[in-house]
Amino acid sequence: MNDLLAIQYAKRFIQRRDVKAVQFQNGDYYPDSSLNNLNQHAPLGFQMQHLEKHLEGTATYGHYLLDAESNCRMFAFDLDLEKTGTWVPMINDDGSISPVDCNPREEWSNRASLARPWIKYQMGMLARKLINTIQTELNIPCAAAYSGSKGIHVYGFTGPMPAQQVRAAALFALEATDDWELFKGQHFFKHKLRDPEMGYPNFSLETFPKQDSLDGKDLGNLMRLPMGRNLKSSDPCFFLDLNSPIGVLAPHPDPVRLLESGDPYTS
Image (tube, rainbow, N blue to C red; front, side, top):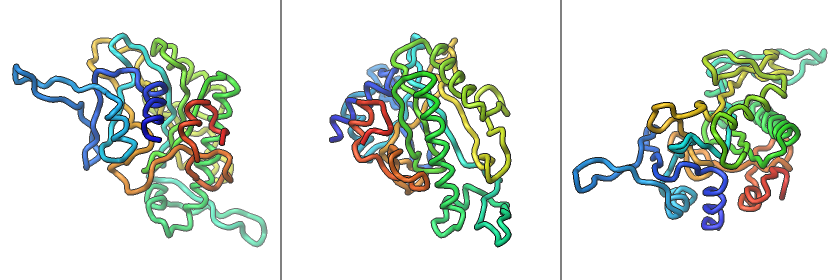
C-alpha cells in the first residue's frame, strides 16, 4: 500500500521537490544534501522511494511548503498542547465542575493520567470543528492527523496556488470558526473561550504556510510529513478516522482512499 500512498503524498503535500528535510533523533530537521564534485553540499530532493521510506518508518522527512516560485499546495493548522492548562475531572455530586490545573503535555505523555480521556475528546472535537469549517467554507479536500507527539494537524488541500492565496484561504477558514484569536506574531492563535469545560485553553494553534512568498529566503518553513515515525515520540502517527467516537483517536482504515477522496469521513 505504501507505493499508492506515496503517490497521494506527492499529489497532496509535496510542492517543493528539489529539496527535503531529514529529522534527526533529537527531533531537529536539516536539509538533506550530499557533497558534489566541488566538495559543496548539494540538496537532495524527493523521489518516490523517499516517501515510501517515510511511510515505512525507516526515515523521517519534512517538506518545505513553498517552492522556488512561492507556490504552495496545502495549508495546515497545527494544534499543540500547552505546558500550562486545566483539565475537567468527573462532575461533582451537585452537578458542578472542578477544573484541575495541570501541564497538558505531561499529562498526555503519561498514559496512566486521568486527564488523557478529556484531552482525547478535545482533540477529536477540534479536528471535527476545523474540518467541518474547511468543508463548508472552502469546499476543498482535507484531512486530519495525529502528529505522534503533542497534538493534531488539520490539512486543507488547495492544489498548487500562490502561497499568498493559500494563506488567505487558511485565515479565512480560521476566522469563519469565530473561535480563535491571534496571540503571538502572525501565526499563533489561542481559543477565545478560556473556560476549560466549553473552550480549549489547553491548545495553541499555528498556521502554515507562514510566508506569502519566500521573499529572498532560501527554503521557508517546513512540516513533518504525516504518518511514519516522529522521532521525538514513541507514539504512532496516523490520519484520524472521524467516523470513530469523538473521544477515540483511531487511525483511518484506508489512508489511500482518504487522500484520494479528500473526505475525512470516508471509510
